[in-house]
Amino acid sequence: MDEARQGTADKLIRNVFRYMDKNARDIMTHRKNIVAIDEEESLEDALHFMLETNYSRFPIYRESIDEIIGFMHLREAMTCYLKNNYRNVPVKELHSYIRPVDFIPESKNIDRLFKEMQAKKNHIVIVMDEYGQTSGLVTLEDILEEIVGNIMDEHDVEEELIIVLSASSYIASGMLELEKLGDLLHVTFDTEEYGTLNGFMIDKLERIPNEGEECIVVYKNYRFTVLEVNDNTIQRVKIEKLPMA
Image (cartoon, rainbow, N blue to C red; front, side, top):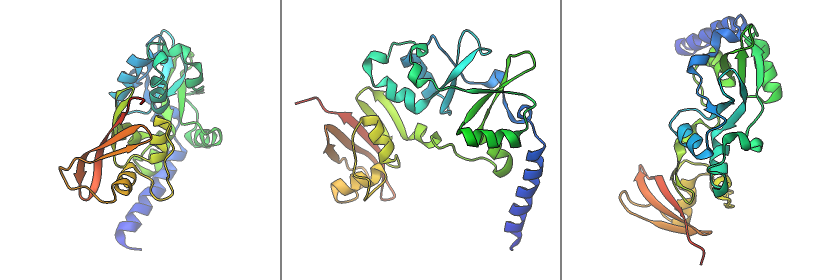
């Protein structure tokens, strides 16, 4: 084993031993740094707030951070937002979009917590102090970082891959997965030949656009306009829903 790999292995082993001795209190995001949403906020205001952060899951609270009722995922909030009659609805009324959350004591060993979160497929838990108040928040990513360093959440990239301009228009990265885009637009893409928006556009255009060239693809009542091309890859695409004929 070369020195670089040996160094990485040694560091990983040291991290594992440190990890075994830590509790939720040691790795949690402190309550003052929790980014949460008041249940009284309208969905529209809540979504705008979400898009200004670097997070994908947001605790929902009633009156104060000490009464967290669940959490909402950015992706689901975006899907819900596209239903026009939900835009001005208070978050608290979107029951099917608010996921339950588990509460744990500060003293919870993170080795045991990690196994429990994996078993329940939880990505976030709320840490409570001895007085029953919110002390902090722990994510599955926080625990994994104790061993392997910074990792990427399964939806973190997605937050940067699409921008909602309105209920019928978006700007999307060429790296956006077609399956996720299809869920958002309620459109079925043929994903056997390609998995990203970039692949879809190149397939429909039958070529790679030149830098600065504006190309348009119309597909299932949507117009896809190439906005940026770099390194033979379509970087950005504007997506607009066409009016019904």
